[in-house]
Length: 111
Ligand code: 5GP
Image 1 (cartoon, rainbow, N blue to C red):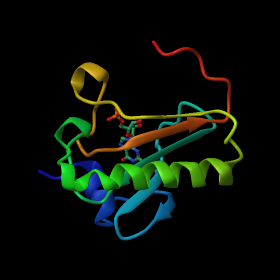
Image 2 (image 1 turned 30 degrees about the vertical axis):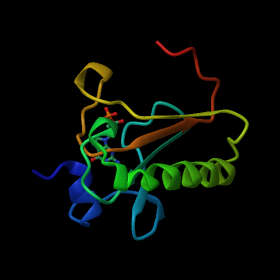
Image 3 (image 1 turned 180 degrees about the vertical axis):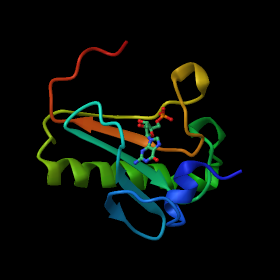
Image 4 (image 1 turned 90 degrees about the vertical axis):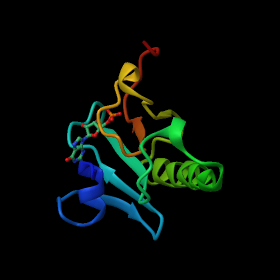
């Protein structure tokens, strides 16, 4: 079943794109928790980090590289968080793998 991010990737739901290539899409989060809050995701439908297959692990390296690039563009390279919520107990609400790139303010300790 397609998720809202699947629909965004297919162009059926609007978004504000920050980065795109054949494999990865980065968009502004619709409910930002900080001045910079970007979601970086593979276009491939993978539910979450726990379900990623070894052959798709290079996508994670590419996402880390794109996060570095966006952090620099946004001027937050001195302090940001890159995180993924894996599963309902961690607060995952959209079951299409994505990483939150959060920064632009002082971030509190992880809860
Ligand atoms: P999760 O809770 O799964 O880690 O993160 C889902 C994120 O997706 C949330 O931060 C939420 O604000 C964001 N989100 C949910 N629906 C949409 C949408 O339609 N468009 C965009 N740009 N972000 C969304």
